[in-house]
Length: 230
Image (cartoon, rainbow, N blue to C red; front, side, top):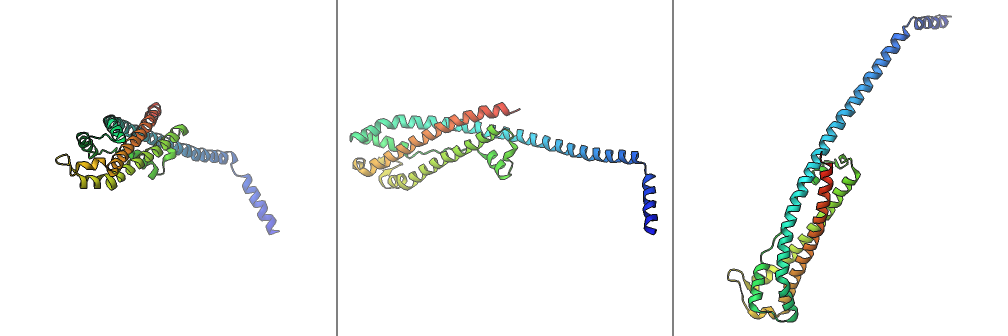
């Protein structure tokens, strides 16, 4: 009997609730939570959009810097190859003259290296924000570009290893850099001289080809970034 009375009491109490008011309060709470959620999402979207714009501007600046440096390096390598190609033919024909050998060695001892700009890429990778680039095509292009950038740097590093391990020892032993003279002019008739020069020439040629490919991809990425830079 006590349980029946308690149940009846609860039922009567529920009947006394203002269900319309309670429903209105629940709707207000729901709308408040939903609005807060939507507002938070809007804020996140705005922040991500600003961050994406910042990264795109950073990529564009890096690519423009790389284009400028690549163009300069390509001009230098093209001039070097143009002047060295006749000497290569003379080496192959065994008609090398001492004066031309001295002249080419002055160019060999001057070595340059491309310094690439990739700070924005390292920043976005280290922060884990690569997916902030909402355009899949752009994101893929950025990744592919920096893969090629690393490949070009590898060729540059290999060239420097060759220069340090083979060219420098030869120069230190056989060539007076200050006076521009060979210790023994007959060295230009040896296989050692031929291999040192031919290897250096090949390295310059490979590097130039890599620079040309990277420059083409740099132009393409620049165009894509400029179309997204708003």
